[in-house]
Image (cartoon, rainbow, N blue to C red; front, side):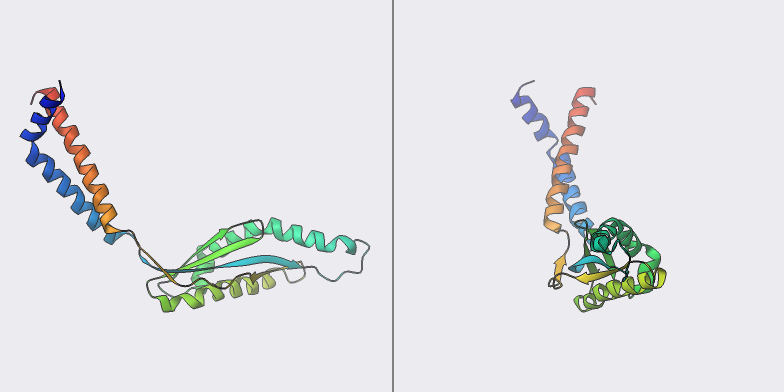
Length: 189
């Protein structure tokens, strides 16, 4: 089968091919409405510990162990802050927060909301609530604290582009129509 025969087959089924391309493009463009969109704002925090004053003979190594404890505790801190129970206590209705460990002691907190005015309080609330909760849980141990390293970023709008999704849907429609036309020819239907 040469290129002319393939062209004839596709030309004979051109309405079917165009219909699937349009169907894929419409589905792709409409699917953008179902994906989340809104505003986001993030800030970097440093997890540190303050050693408990101790007059013991190992006080020379206390700062080292304090930093090692903070470094080892970062995963636990992220898990605590990302837990559903913790976030339900802290966040207002409609806001969501993503918490990620960036480096051994750096944590990025990102707040998302449909309204940019609602983005200021979640970043502060999460860090303050964490600092309070940790002092309640272990008041006599090393007190780990979240301290802001950077200023919060400016609110940025995020959403999937409907035109890109429409183009991807059109390509998928074209591919599926060519597969169906090829199967019809192969099976001689």
